[in-house]
Length: 107
Image (cartoon, rainbow, N blue to C red; front, side, top):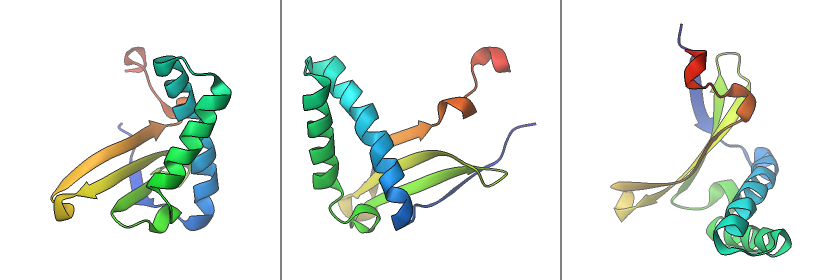
């Protein structure tokens, strides 16, 4: 049986947990791709997130969603931006927590 997931809007009080995950994850990417120290990469990630989402979950044209499983447990996040008056969507982040991921051998 395939599990059911639900996407719902992120609430303002959930944003700090998302921010904490995102900054760490993005900083690791920045460090790996550009050779910056983790400290510098964290600063860049924090600033870019603040620039992109100045109103956090209420930032116009940005959508932050929580992914929940059939039990209502938070299992990940989606962040996308609407472009071209909503005609185009650009996915900025999609993440499922590791403990909820399956590998090919799980099927």
